[in-house]
Image (cartoon, rainbow, N blue to C red):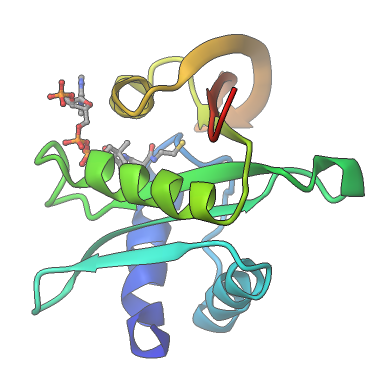
Length: 160
Ligand SMILES: CC(C)(COP(=O)(O)OP(=O)(O)OC[C@H]1O[C@@H](n2cnc3c(N)ncnc32)[C@H](O)[C@@H]1OP(=O)(O)O)[C@@H](O)C(=O)NCCC(=O)NCCS
């Protein structure tokens, strides 16, 4: 993983600078990305990187949803695919594997906080992985000189 940090950071930086899937405005640098990965893995949660043997094509992970301890069985997922590798099934495969690993860790609920309402690729990817729409927060973000919604989706894991 450590040798992939730069490539993971570059994919994320592209989506920060050109997309609304994340509400960050300035890309994190490599040490900050390394610290985020470390925080996820130290919490016992999955941070997955997909490669084709030559370069990194995408990544996905689950982090704690909120810090208060009663939320400890709930996580929030994130998935980002290299701009030249989208729409080839990778996002869906990454997310499915994150869900599988989370289930193995005893996670019960996975929340997707999707920016923004027009992010059909992310909404469809989550739907295909069994998430259902649970709400929309209207105009909570301001990026690229416009207001953005977040779409909340949820997937239950484990026995009902
Ligand atoms: C969202 C993202 C991770 C999806 O990954 P992907 O590899 O492009 O998606 P997949 O090829 O796995 O597609 C999964 C499903 O979504 C659908 N889909 C993907 N892109 C789509 C698009 N632009 N419009 C409509 N449907 C789309 C696919 O048809 C597929 O459904 P299917 O299995 O019925 O064919 C990727 O597009 C991405 O990195 N987007 C920018 C960053 C982002 O928004 N990340 C999510 C943050 S919440």
